[in-house]
Image 1 (cartoon, one colour):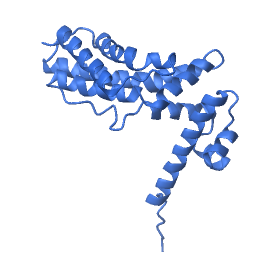
Image 2 (cartoon, helix red, strand yellow; image 1 turned 45 degrees about the horizontal axis):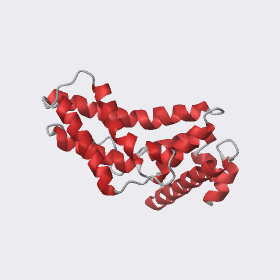
Image 3 (spheres, one colour; image 1 turned 90 degrees about the vertical axis):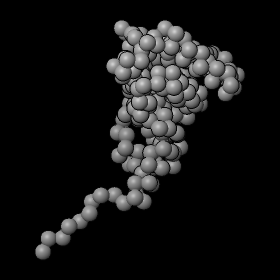
Image 4 (tube, helix red, strand yellow; image 1 turned 120 degrees about the vertical axis):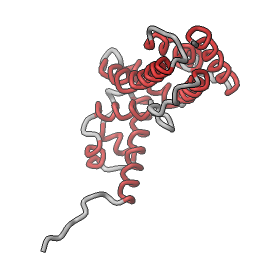
Length: 210
């Protein structure tokens, strides 16, 4: 008689694994920021996260793999940046994307991540590569694809979706995010952030709306 054994992890074990993964990512981000990427070992991260070294190595066999996971997680929004609004209402869709982007940039872990990359850039340029290719570019591509969809729907006229995406995201990040890396107390309130997003949408509509 053949006995079938279910090798799929139970919901409980999946939840525990996700909780441990989250603890590892939080501990690693904190230690990278406090001690630097080079001086932080996987053993120290395991201890800070309250997990065994075997558990950490099972999920992240190298420190580079762990940093890649941190970058990927930091650039994900609550509802997923891949869930772009449907084309047809350019202003409403762009406003939704802009608010999602502002919320993402104002999360504390985002500024922390950039500080790690900037501090370690001379010795570990691969961290910047990870930040660019695993974080920024997938998000940027999602906005570019949305603009292309609006162009196909006939709501906007533009020749260069990549340039338009750069313009829109830049108008928001230049106020919401970049000053935070230099000014310790830079924290515009919600009304100011919404106003910046609204103005960016108006600028885009004035330039590209059909």
